Image 1 (cartoon, rainbow, N blue to C red):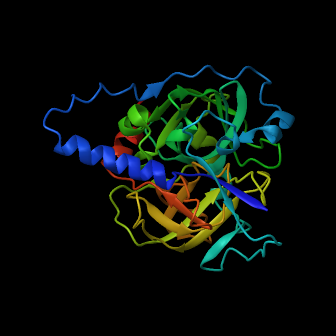
Image 2 (image 1 turned 90 degrees about the vertical axis):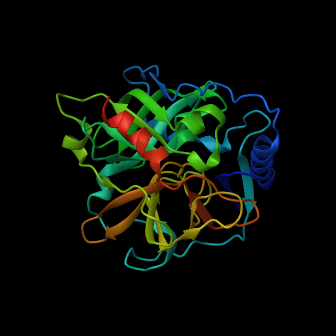
Image 3 (image 1 turned 60 degrees about the horizontal axis):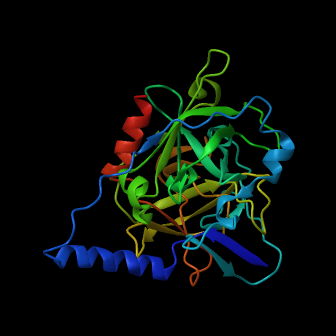
Length: 315
C-alpha cells in the first residue's frame, strides 16, 4: 500500500532555510511584504450540504491533485494488516481509540471546499472565552494562498454520522507566519463556530485545555481521522509515545505514528489521562517527511500559536 501525508519535502525545507539565510546576510534585501490577513469569514455551508455521502466522499486535503509546489508527498511503506493494540499500550504506532472519555466528543473531522473540491482534515474543541473555538492545522483553514469555504466541524464523527451536529465556522484563523508564507513551523489554525439551538460547542461536547511554551520531549497522545490507506476516515485513530524535537528541517515535535492523510489538524496532548480522555493540547498533526515513514510532526505551540488561539477565543 502507499501511505500519503501532508508533508514538507526536504527541498521545501532546505529552500526555506536558505531563503532565511540569504535575507539575514544581504544588506540590500528588499523589505518583507506586509503580512497576509490571518483571519477569514468563510462562506458557510448551506443547510444539507454536508450529507453523510458527501462527508464520506471528501478527499483528505493532502491527496487532492493541487498545483505544482504542493507540500503533498507520498510515502511508500510495507504492505500488510495493521495490528490493533488497546489504548493502554504505550507507545502506540496507530490504532482505533477504544478508551472512550472526553476525547471521543471533543475531537472530530473538519470538512471544507478547497479549489472547488470537498476535502477533510481533523480538529478539536478547546476551552475558550466564547465556548466555540476549534483548533486545527493552518493548512486546514488556508492552503496555497486560498482560504477554505463551506468549513464545518463534526465532533464525534462516526462513519458519515454527525451525532453532535455539523458546526459551521463563522471565522477561521491562522498564524501570521502561515497566512503570509505557509511556513511549516507555524502550521496552526483555529475556527470559531456558530452556536446551535442556543448552545455553544463547548456546552454541547465539552472542551480540552491547552498549554503553550511547554517544551519538548514529552509523553504525547495524538488523535485524528486519517482517511487515506490503510484508514478510511470512519474512526478516531490515536498514536502515543515519547516525543522528541525534529532534528532535520523544522522546529516541530516528532512522534512515531502511522496516521495518514485526513489526520492533519488532529490534537496532540500531554498529561493525557486515558481513563477520562482528557489532556492539555500542545500541538496538531501537521506533516511527515517522505524519507522517514511512520513519523508524524506537529508544530510547537509557542507565542505564535497562542496569538491565534487568543484571537479566535475573543471573537
